Image (cartoon, rainbow, N blue to C red; front, side, top):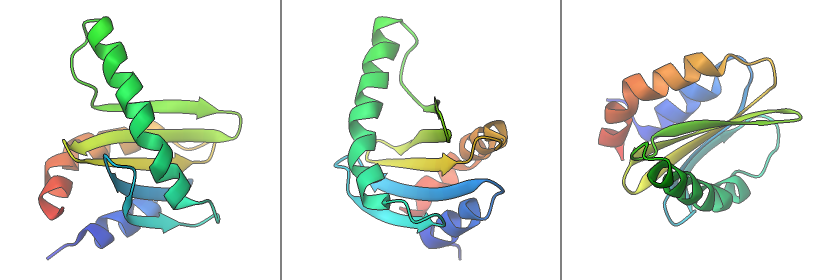
Length: 117
């Protein structure tokens, strides 16, 4: 049977993925995979406030609940997704990475990932 560790490691093997963090809404790391030496716990601590702001934007713009998003930075992207009401996932990727594929996988397997938590 697959575990959350298997999911995190599998996502971490995608081309361009440097960090994968599964975290609670409290900002604490549940599991992580890091290739580039980034601080997974610091990423986890910052994601909930970002998700909260995105959720408020969705309400203000009458778009409904926040599910997933992509932030572009000077040196890559961060993909975030709600897995369950209490768990989130953040994936830090290099600039040339196809984030569309990651978003598709997260949407496709969100329920399966949730079942592992």
